[in-house]
Image (cartoon, rainbow, N blue to C red; front, side, top):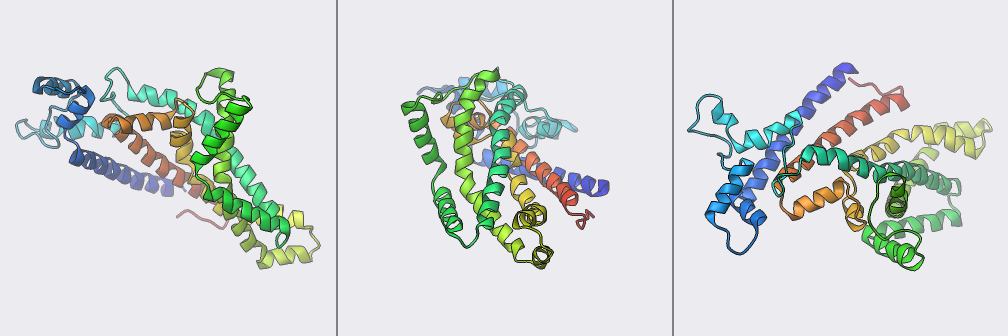
Length: 327
């Protein structure tokens, strides 16, 4: 397993380098440093002197990928590519382009904690509720409960998450005044601000996840080992929880593991609408302001988390199914 994980680490490193280079060249094929300076300085009349000063303060006055006037290794290191993108590989995220006082690494650490307060409950409850609801439908398969449960799942997955947010804010915050409509406070006071987005995020994904798990469980129910378990006299509850659920663990891990990067990076939509200062809102603000320093950092972190989540899923497969071997 160690050799396998080391090999995956090597592949992941190559992927991160590729993502980093692709993001860099894609961004600078659309925006030049002069364009970035004009956008961040603002105003109708921006002088060339202001543009040059802005670029000098942020290191964008250097050549893009190669400095022909430098000597030796500085031909490569005295460039925007090396100083603004290669530094990501050693965890140096630098400072925001729009606000030099903003240290991106510090913001990521602080905001990740806020995002986790929202995303972790959603992640845990999503798996528990979706699996439980799917097992309930399978237990009552070919009945009215199963039929109307599937109809409910289709309706829920057909509705945009924005609809849940708007209706939830209007009903629970405007009419009933049970929770604040948006905002955030640290400590235990955060609960009253997070309970509604957690509930609505859970509802917005429940239809998709429950319908997927129901299909997987139904496939397992028709297999020979399930019929053998029933022939031994085991009850339907024992068959579902002890046999079907255990053998469907791999696709459940795959579905849940694909959501892990979002657990750390935050929910873009929910954090923005509810005014939660997590990484999701951080990304939205950076995109709106075309802050390349923040955007490239978040793309890099997203790629790293995706690679890590896939490696964790592979390890988890070996825990739930002894037949799986990492080689």
